[in-house]
Length: 443
Image (cartoon, rainbow, N blue to C red; front, side, top):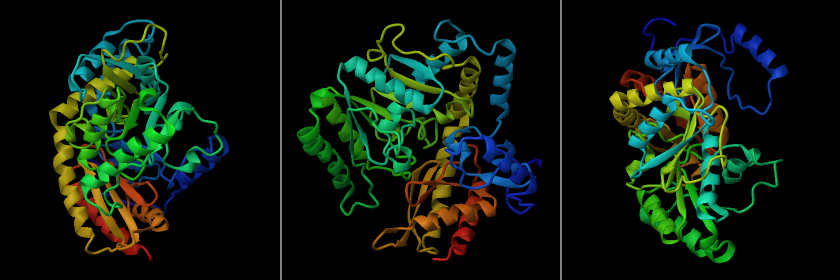
């Protein structure tokens, strides 16, 4: 990669010949269940820039789906990985002890968004973190039912898939799913006609007056699981009162509150965890994606009183792998030193630039988010708020052709979740490319 290259440079038609050849090989041997929005075949990455196999340079506003929090191949993370790899690669923390896992649990306790003491369970992904949280909630409360939210994404394994309600294609063909899961509407201020407080109250009212009256008794609900900002559902930021009232509701009925911070956590919103913006303290927090800067790791961290299950009740052969733990420790150090603050300041700069696009492009209905977790919702008419789903898909492609990597979220929004090392200059480039790509859409 060219030294200090921070702007896109497209040298070939897309996909280039090398990328096309690899994609053709992929089609023959890799599961067709994967979703590839555009033909990017990465060769290497550095910071917020990636290079494909044909030498094309892209500005990455996906971070591998919000994973490479510290940027691609941050030298501190790479050093930690190499150093631990020279010592030992694996010893299974479920049957043996090693200090990196203990140290990571201590670090997580120091940053957890609720009062301690805490304990942590280590898995390999966000969905495993949610599976652990789900099992733990049932074990601790001796209750069986769970409340989740429409638009939510908590994973694709059978338990977490039962909680997920983002896209029907994720559930189609896999029924029956886990019983005892009930879904409530997630408050969407952009599509609600009343005040923010009324928007929050409407969702809480549905749980209290519909679910708890007609479908499930609150004393049989083990937990409510919620994303403090909905990720795949559209990067929807609920009113602050929503999580506060949800905490009050769960406390009233002895229900655990699980906050899914897999996508919104680890500094992305300008706080270590997005729930911190509301002052709400959960009972369990699920962590994944950005925690190890690209190595597979998922964690369920809970109040120590809650994580009281006995040996053998839940475990993972590879969870908390020592190399992944080393990467996570380096990641947390970088987040604390500068990257959480960078997410806040550069995120505000990027948000301001994006909002200026609204006056130029009527198709942009809403710009929302916190830090470097930003959603852009496209509509065909700002009055009716008709969803511009086809246009959203076209915008993703137009950005790719111009050297900007973005992904969709929800039915008609795109998400910007760049590495937290993004600079203000790269944020300005992002806005400029989006401006050009929006102008190319035929409405």
